[in-house]
Image 1 (tube, rainbow, N blue to C red):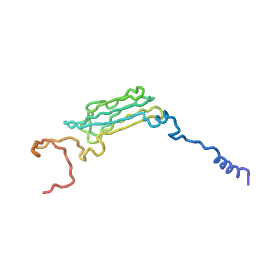
Image 2 (spheres, rainbow, N blue to C red; image 1 turned 45 degrees about the vertical axis):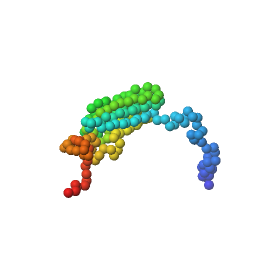
Image 3 (cartoon, rainbow, N blue to C red; image 1 turned 180 degrees about the vertical axis):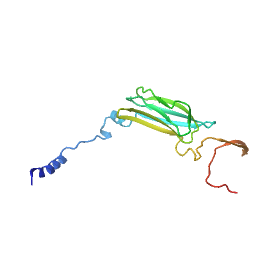
Image 4 (spheres, rainbow, N blue to C red; image 1 turned 135 degrees about the vertical axis):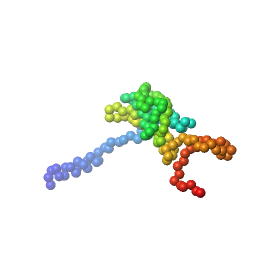
Amino acid sequence: MRFGGWLVPVLLFAACLGPRPTVPDRESLPASRVSLLGQAPLALSLDGHVRDDGTWELTAEVTVSGTLAEPPILRVELPDGARLLDGRPAESLPASGTDATRVRRFVVADARAPVQVVVSAVAGGYGASVAASWPPVGVVDRAGTSGFAPIKPTRVGGMPVDRAVPVESDVAPSR
């Protein structure tokens, strides 16, 4: 057997017996380092409601924790056919130190699918991004409407009704 034939297995065996690097777990880290592990640099909440005229009024709350290398960019992504009536479609938010919260409001018309808001801060090869949509999945009905539609005035339980939520049905009406 040649010299190199037995040397490689012996070295591999010796390497396995040597000290092993350890990765610290949460319990062995100082409290300040543990809190940094669970802190996201960006957070986004998006809430909304349908106004009487059928438009959607959305409120986005963006929280920046810590300092970012670049200011975060907020973008509103509209579904096909939707229009932004109030608010900016894209905006560079000031990234001022730690725990800064910014609130932005939007009014959207003719939306037939959820509106998405995206906030991202990217610098070089790293960054952070967060997204939220409204209404939540499943709230927009199959017809794509979420507001009221006018109907022939009628009374239901003694109450006058002149608007209703449109409903699409796969079942033929019974006669």
